[in-house]
Amino acid sequence: MKRIFVSGCYDIIHAGHLQFFEEARALGDHLTVSFASEDVLWHHKQRRSSIPDEHKKAVLEGLRMIDEVVIGTDHDLGLDFKNYFLNAKPDVLVVTEDDQYADVKRDLCKQVGATYQVLAKTPPKFDPISTSGIVKWVKAPTESPLRVDFAGGWLDVPRHARDGAYIVNCAISPVVSLRDWDYEKRAGLGGSGAWALLNGEDGVDAELDLGVGWQDPAVIRETGLCVWRSGPRPVLDFKRNGDMLNGKMALLWTGTEHDTPGFADNQRDYDHIAQSAELARHGVLNEDLHQLAEGINLYHAAQLDEGMDRLPDLHGAIAQKYCGGGHGGYALYLFASSEQRDAAVQTNDTLRPIEPFCL
Image: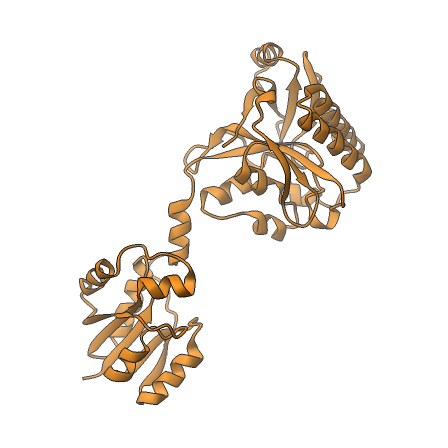
């Protein structure tokens, strides 16, 4: 009888595990599956098991291709099954191509004369998934805010960052979900950051890999009315709940999409942008709506100097600017009162009210 042995955490059993067990079992007559105990999992990965060990053991024993299940309790890194293996002396230890403990497992096989066999990757029957990916998916929120930026945009792009400068932005509602996205796409509201959050990802690294800034995933994750320090990674300067903005913000759809990465290295006045963020920061700090409006308008002046089209004036608006990289997408309008905001919305079909969002 040819005895096959495999090991892993198998913390959440998925189709990829089943395929691996099937292919390993086909190599012999008897398959033993070992999984790391709750104690080992915590010691080496600093996470709890999804279910108690005895429950996990019962689940694995219920799979038709598995003949025996053991719980690994040894604390040797990558070899929680060491004592069992030395005593049972199976014929073949099967691993995947990406096994990170290959060296110590090869040495263990030599001690008992077992064959160390790497199972070649075969096209999966399902889209590949991992236990960590499942955990992220389960922990992901079902809804997410988007965001508007007031001033300091582009100073969150590491190559454009400035010491002592700031970025001012706010998470907004209505919120979005993977099933319900009631905004235009590619519109300057941080949709990629929201999409990452809804899929259980952080999003900061993904944005930086695109060559753009981190402000979208940062404020969408943080929520609220936020001031950030310019730099290579998000550092929160301070945050308010955004009550000063209730009933005073609206978005105007310009009719065209925009492309943030495509405009990331345009010629622009970063001194002007830093000054706008300083004004906006003091407006947030002092809860002074008109001071915040000054910062927004100063930023919009920098956008116009960059070559963006002039936005239409709306009655009652005290500030306006393109969201995100501009050159299309949504434009933000700030009003002095909710009555003025609501009156403008009622007379303009392309204007929609938004509110600050804070957790």
